[in-house]
Length: 174
Image 1: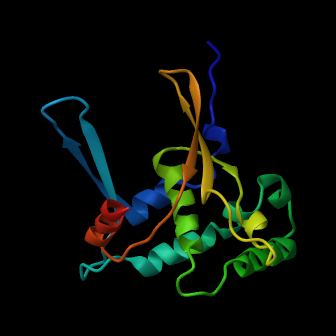
Image 2: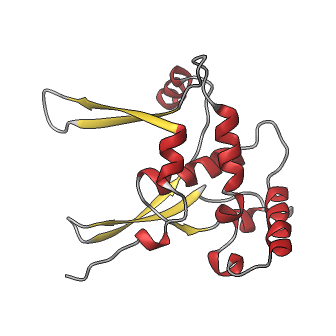
């Protein structure tokens, strides 16, 4: 059996996740199969008990070029060109209050740091054409399932809700 390692393709750092997020694991035991595991991820709180959203925003800004641009294009750029690339990537994010682009960046970060699933397709360069509407998944990532010897494709869709109950209500009503 050929061993496949996607770890070298990961660009988001697990240490960044650990510094900004925590999680709770919960096992759901049913009378009949299947059972399920739920993992809830949340932003760590500051000393006053408030979620550290400012720190999370700063973290995600650091990943903008990694999220938007292939590694080959970023490799070996002089500092001024790296700075220009950052500004171009930043400008790809539309300044609308209800834009889902920040959620797309967040789902990218979580898939890489939690599931260790590297990004296979960069959406941002494809969705910035003003003549095209957004189509498709918010993220396409890869995971190798060792037990089944199968390469899994993850198609991610991000939605950000103000409350957990609001997210559940939306899911149940669909």
